[in-house]
Length: 242
Length: 244
Image 1 (cartoon, helix red, strand yellow):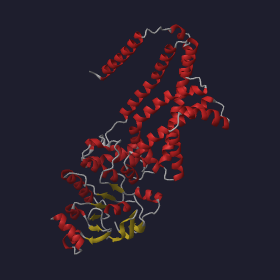
Image 2: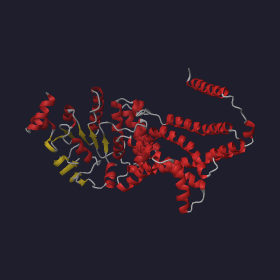
Image 3: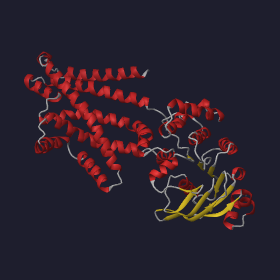
Image 4: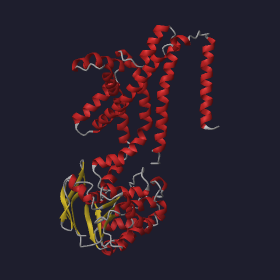
C-alpha cells in the first residue's frame, strides 16, 4: 500500500484534531500509528477508513484519492475493512451471522455462499465452536477476533484496526495480536493504531508517531523506537517504556 | 411455588375479596334482563375489536413517522414532530375527538364517523408511540451505526438490519402498554356516537337499570382483548431476548 496524505485537517467544533498533517509512506504492507491519547491517531484512522470526511486536505491510497461525498465513501468502505476498539459486533446476531450479514447484504452472496466463505476462516482461527453464540456469550478476545473476521471475509483491499486490544486483558490481547501477526504473514495489508509498542515494532513496516495533531516522526520501527531525536517522541517512549 | 400457580393464587384472592364486597352490600342481581341484550354486547365488542385493530396499525405507522420527524436534523420537520407530540399528549382525548369529528372532519367533508374515530384515536396514541420509538432508537449506541457504515450498509439497510431489530426489543414492553391503553381509550369513541362496546353497555344499562350487570361484562370484554396483547408482548420479548 502506498499512502499519501497532504495537508489533512480535521476539526470538531472549535478543536483542531488534525492540523495540516502530512504523511508519505513507501509501498508497504503494514503501517502502525502510535502516540499519546488525544493526539489524533483514531481520528486519522477514521478518515482513512472512509468513516469521516476531513475538513480539508487529501488522502490517496495507491495514487487514488478518497471520495469526498457520502455515496462515494460508502462504495469505498465496501472495499476495505474496519475493526473498532469496542468490537462493535451486532449483539442481536450470532457470531456467524455477524460475518454473513455484510456478505449477503453488501456483497450480494447467497446465504449458502456466505456460510461457505466464512467456514474456513472460522476454523483457521479456532472460532468454529463459538460460531452460533451471540456476542454476549463470547470473551473479549473472541469478540474481537470475530470482529476482525467480519472485516476480513469480504476480502478487503486493506484493514483498518483502531486500538483492537485496548479493551482486553493481557491474555486476550495476545490472542488478538497473534491473529494480526498471522494476517501479516499471510500478506494482508493493514493500518493499525495501537499502544502495544513491542507488537508495533514486530509487525510494522513503517511507524508514524502521531501527536499534537501532526506526524511528529515517521520511518521504519527501529528508527522510530530506538533512534528518534524528536524530544516529544523520545519523552513519550521514555515515560511508557520506563 | 410455580409462577403459574402463584398467578392463580393471586387471582383467586382478588376474586374472593371482590365477591365478599358484593356479598356485603346485598346487591340484587338481575342478569336475566341483561342477558336479553347479549347480541348487543357482542356487536359492540366486535366493533371495539375492529376499531382497536385498525387504530393499532395506524397509530404504529403515525408513531413511526413522528419518531423519524423528532430525530430530523431539519428544524422545520423536527418542529412538526415536537409540536404534534406535545399538543396531543397535553390535551384530553375527549376534546380531540369532539374537535376532530365536529370541526375537522366536517370541514374536510369526512362523513364516516368510524374512519374519523380511528384517525383521531391513532393520532392520539401515535404521539405516545412516537416518544417510545424515539427513546428506543436513541438508546442504540452510536458505535452500532458506525459498525453498520463500516461494513458498507446504506442508511436504510443500517436501520432495517442493525438498528430496528435492537430497538424493537427495547420498546416492546412500552409499546404493549400503550396498545393496552389504546384498546381502553377506544371506549371514549362513544362520545361521537360510535356504536362500540362501551356505548352498547351504556345503552343496555339505560334499558335495564342494571348498572353492574351491564358494566361487569364490559370489564371482562376489555380484559379479553388486553390480556392476549400482554401475552403476545411477553412472547415477543422472549423471542427478541439477548444480552446486550
